[in-house]
Image (tube, rainbow, N blue to C red; front, side, top):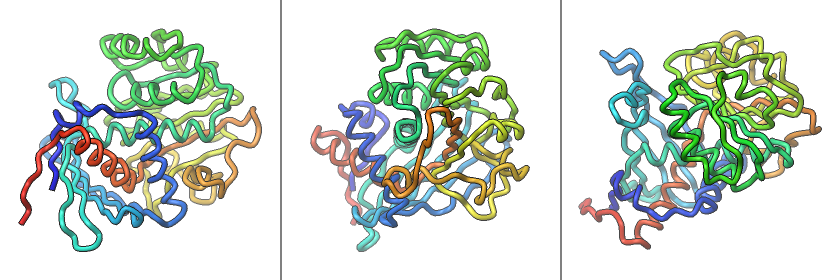
Length: 327
């Protein structure tokens, strides 16, 4: 069994295309039946009211691997210099249940989510998109911008986040993306007129922060995270709505479209389609250049498997990690 610590994973020489391909394999498997994601289970982590620990499970039949990820979601960790997502990912053989690998879950979650955001935008945004708005200055959102920049020729990248320090850190980090990078003064100024919007605010509760009057013709918004920034009225602004999977019985207590689900604005019947089906050509994505599209991502646990498999192979090639005896 291979153990990959945070230090091992951060030392990997990762190719962005390989990461995107691995995550796309996981996304496509949702539509083909080759992979599946079980409903996430979790519990509040008292005494911290703004944190929770979740168990995320997935499998990919082609790789013969299943995953169990125990991950803590604590947005306030940033103030202590810790990642907001912590925990461990275990990969197991589907043939005999033997553990294959154990690795840092924060690294996997960051790369998997960022690649999922980039893939969704690549599939549904206008190919000629030139202006990218990034809500969120640390972690997943800037990583998604970097991955997206390898797929689009952006002229302008705008950044807005909760603190000046995170905004400036993102601007410095994204300077190598080949576009003009600037700090926006508000959500509205960041989003208004943008072709693609990454809504990656690390919220600790549902808050109606997304400005309705900033949604424009042809705009594609990719929203993710434990809580929603979307006001319920915003559903009237979109021509199409996509997600990666639907969970029957969802009450909208969490998730990027939580408020929309809780108030019945988004239902299984109201969805235009699913990102995995668009990825394999089974469903139609954008119909016209003027379509205003909302994409909200829950996350697909089988992408932990496909990305984890890539990380194992790259780590062994680069002689990183520690082989542990299981028996």
